[in-house]
Amino acid sequence: MTVEAGVFTALMLVVLVLGFGAAYWRRPEDPHTLEEWGAGGRAFGNWAIWFLIGGSMYSAYTFVAVPALTYGIGAIGFFAVPFAILTTPLTFVLTTRAWSVSRRHGFLTHSEFATARFGSPGLGAAVAVTGILATVPYVAVQLISLQAVLRTVGFGGEWPLLAAVTVVSVCTFRSGLRAPALLSVLKDALMAWMLLTALLMVAMYGGWDRTFRLAGDRFAATPSPVDGLLLPDTGHFGFLTLVIGSALAVFAYPHALVAMLAAKDRATVRKNAAALPVYCLALALMALLGFFALARGVTPVDGDLNTIVPRMIHQFFPGWSAGVAFAALSVAALIPAAVMSIAAANAFTRSLYRPYLRPDASLATEARVSRWVSLVVKFGAAALILAVDPTFSVDLQLIGGVIILQTVPAVLLGLLTGWFHRAGLIAGLLTGLVLGLGMLYEIPEADGTGHFGGSSWPLGDGTTVYVGLVALALNLAVAVVATVMLRIAGVDGGHDATRPEDYEADAGDPRLRHLDSLIDGLPRQQRAGVR
Image 1 (cartoon, rainbow, N blue to C red):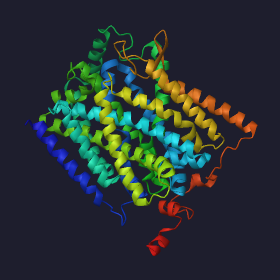
Image 2 (image 1 turned 135 degrees about the vertical axis):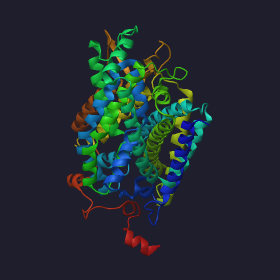
Image 3 (image 1 turned 90 degrees about the horizontal axis):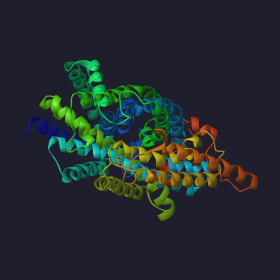
Image 4 (image 1 turned 30 degrees about the vertical axis):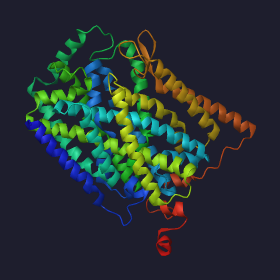
C-alpha cells in the first residue's frame, strides 16, 4: 500500500468511528423522533451550524465538479462562484423567515410549509415528490466525486463506491443529522490543509500568472469556440441564467432547510448566513485549480474529467499530504450525501407517508420510516451513476436544479406572500416540470447523440439559456394566470394556517410549539405524565 493510500485509509477509519460515535453526541432522552434524528433536536449553536452548513452546501460538487468544468470548458465553470455569493442574501432574509415559521409550527420540510401556507396537502405532496426527485441526482454528484477519488487512490471498480455508500448509510441510519454535523468539523480541518497545500503548489510552479498564460494557450489550441479563460461574446446570457437559476435552486433544495432548522435560534441562522461568503473563497480557489491542472498537463483517469482534481493531487502533493487531501474530498462527498438523504426522507415521511399512508403514525414510527427511506435515496443515487455517465458531473446537479426550481413559487415566494391559489401553484409546478424535463430530454450528449446531455438550451448563434429558468418562467406565468382566474371565479383558495407574526418568531417566543405537541396534541410535560 502506498503512503497516500495508507493515510487515506487511516483517516477514513477515523471518519467511521466519528460517524458511529455521533449517536452519543448531545444524546437526547428520547432519540427516536424525527425532530431528534432529522433535525438534531433543533439545538445546534453557532459553531455546529457553521460546520454543518459548510459540510452540506459546499460539497464535493464544489471541490471536484467545478474544477472539472473549468478544466474542460473554462470560464463558464465560474458560474458557481457568483451564484454562491447570491445565495448569501437569500439565506439571510428567506431562511430566517423559514426558520421562524418552521419552529413555530414544527415543520421539518418545505413541503409541510407549502401545505400549511396554502391549505393544500396535495401541493405539499407535489413539492415533496419534486424535492425527492431533484435530490437524487444531487446525491449522485457527491458519489461521482467520491468514486473519482477512490479510482485515483487505487480502489477501482464498483465495490469501493458501494462499500462507502454502505458505511455512510449505516452511520446516518444510526446517528441521523448528528453524524454529518460532527464530521463537518473534521472535513473543514482537512479541507483547510488541502487548500493551503494547493496554494503552496501553485506558488512553487510559477504562480497564477504562469498558470493563466499556459491554460490560455491550451484553450487557444482547441477547436471549441466556447472554451477559454474568458466567456465568449455569445456566452454571457447563458452564464447569467445559470447563476440566477442555480442561486434560486439551492435555496429550494430540501437539505438547505434541514441544516438551518437545526439551529437553536434566529441569531444563529443570521450569523451563519452572514459568514457564508468565507466559503465562497474556497469555491473560487477550487475553480482556479482547474486552470492549474490544465496548465500543468494533468490528464484524467480513463478520460473521466471528474478525476482531474484527484489526479492533480496525486501528481503534485507529497504522498502523506495527498492522503489527507483525498480524505478531505471523500468526507466532502459523504457529508452532503447524508444530509440530502435525511432531508428527502423527512419530506417523504411528513408529506407522503403520514398524510396518505399512516395518519396515526407515532413519533418513533416516523423516525424509523425516515431512516429506511434515507437508505433508499443513497442507494438510488448510486444506481443512477452506474447507469448514467455524464461528461461533467455538474450536469447532474444542474438537471436536479431544473426540477427543484419548479417549487420556488410555493416554497420561496410563499415565504413572502400567500396570494397564490393552491390550484394555480400545482398547475404551474406540473407545467414547469413537463417543459423542463422535455427540454432536458432534447439536449444531446457532447457527441451529438442521446438525451439529457446538459441543461443549457441553444438559442442560436452560440447563445444558450438555462432550461430551469425557462421552465420556471412558464411555471410562474401559469400560476399567476390561474390564480387570477380562480379568484375571479370565487374558487376557495385554501386556509393559510400561518400568521404574519409567525415569520418573526424566535426561540424565546412563548407561542413556539415542539414537534410532539403538534402531532400528539399534548405538550411534553403532559405526555410524560400519561405514559
